[in-house]
Image (cartoon, rainbow, N blue to C red; front, top):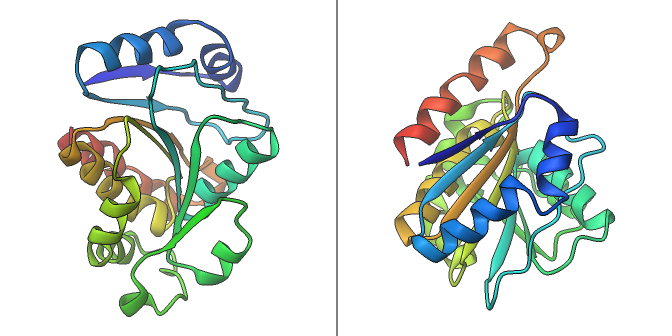
Length: 204
């Protein structure tokens, strides 16, 4: 598993918006084998610009998981990013109504009844497991799955690792961009965000 360490939003912009390390690694990885890689940042998505280098006949899907991930997808769509398919995955049916993604997917309908997870990552994980087949169908045919989520909440922290695992099992190149809580958001959200690292590493 390849890992790109990013320490600031400016660094992420320079990596994703130019023909630099990120783009070249995506191209070379897709030619060699479909492995999983993750891109991590401890900052919010505000002002982050993303672009993808052209890949011949590649099917790229950008998947926002949870509230933070859905917001990131909305910003990408608003910035005019083209050449990819956007998906919004959430347990909150009302939040999905606010999504600009052309492919919204509500998960855990039986478990959460469309009311969200209340910030419980375990419910987020269980919701994703309940809708595992629906997620797999949404990702079908991908060459690259780009997963974005905010850590510390329920759906993002709990469901994103399951989505990554499904993509990995299907053999898709998978890139994850996640944000971590600020210290002022409280210890609870920080603690809930910590297991995400090991979950994603274990699924790789």
